[in-house]
Length: 172
Image (cartoon, rainbow, N blue to C red; front, side, top):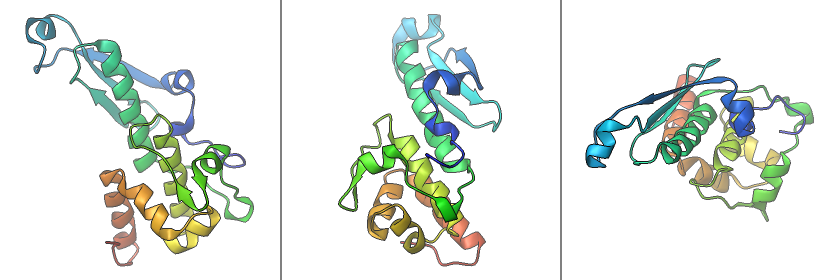
């Protein structure tokens, strides 16, 4: 976000990892003997929040590390809010690049997805979890905003949890 507090999911990898603790573990699963001899599982914990990303499904520790970083970023996007000042809010350059003609184009596997998701959820939180209020500020339609959130099922659950907590009806 250009003029707002930067969310940890938006940090460069080195900056994010500087605030994290990384553990390597042995786990069972595919890979046979190689799997049991080498610590290929990776668990990354964001120290300030305690949120984690972990991966163990690949035989390569580096591949698991990359997956764990992406999962950590998604968890940060879903469960950590950064302050957004509505009076002077402007969508980030990344958001403007991904949202054209009120349509948001992003794959949930893309490295930019957690940052886009974090920006959308931060603005939703600032707008009282009301998509009809947040969408115009993001220069997209409410349905496009909800489609983005639905790309990550845990984010959609969090959106509805926040709405219910505030006495609002859940979205379908």
